[in-house]
Length: 208
Ligand code: PRP
Ligand code: URA
Image 1 (tube, rainbow, N blue to C red):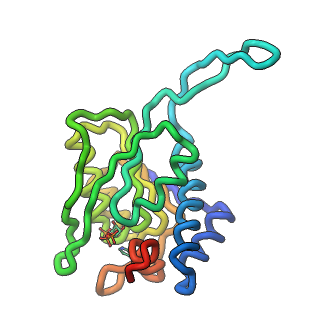
Image 2: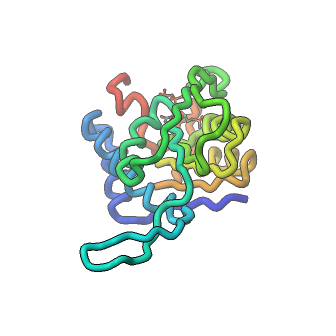
């Protein structure tokens, strides 16, 4: 079973609390999602492979390191978009491949409406970005899309998860490591995370 990494970093806990507040406006919400993503990027990339690199300082030549693996960021539209900038600031060379999914209101199952992945994988590690892991349907489907594409190493980075979503993702994809800022209590009758932060897409884009 994959490991679930929950960050207890004070900055993340502080910022997620601000995101939860219903009074936080979309502009501030977008800033916070970028900042929390940047902090989670630090945690989710701790095991990336390195290769030696020789560099010349103003004083001498020395052996350093550079990232060996090509990283692909995979934001799930819409809400995952807000997490890209934070990751990109840390890894400007990362490729970004968008997947568009929405939850069907009745069945709650994900419906795919966008996928422009190239024919063959161009990256070594895929990092799925989506702030909310509710029933787990969207994350599970995204991991499957990436595996069908040929992705070998996949990580999932979210902000808030329900226990139900973690269980579904772990059961379907035990090899996908999960990185989160918080695990909440439960899903309500509409499959929203409680206490959660509401609809992460609406809160970023002012569409609620
Ligand atoms: C939200 C969220 C996830 C999904 C999580 O997207 O960003 O993709 O719900 O729910 P699940 O774990 O039950 O699948 P939504 O379908 O609301 O689309 P949006 O981002 O376009 O608003
Ligand atoms: N999607 C969201 O944006 N929020 C939830 O609580 C559940 C799914």
